[in-house]
Length: 185
Image (cartoon, rainbow, N blue to C red):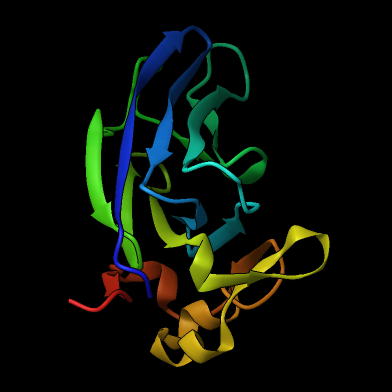
């Protein structure tokens, strides 16, 4: 995998009833991303489309389900259209998860972007890769080059080799922390 520093920068844009953390993921060359929402024993995942530039739009929205209620739809959009979502109950109408205004990470490492306190709790994680580490198939769906698949943990092989969205069904996966480095140290 290509060694590459990736930076996430952004801020909260608040306005009742919805709150959104909006920003950019940037690197020295074009990126693709796999992102996951782990919540309530489920892990929803989605992949971005390959982009020509070296940045991806990033937006995490807490969308109120009912006016005055604590139930929100947690919607994560990345790279012009890819989207993962889940529904949770947050502690208050003013609640904002902690998302750093600036975060640096290495391409090829699965990192936690934020955790969301709620019922059930949720975790948002991202894996960023240089475009040159993937091959683009029909309909713009990318996969990690077959020569790189052996470096990947088993639970990431399906999301990184096919489809644009899905659900991870590995037993127990959603209940334990994830720390994976795919890029060489």
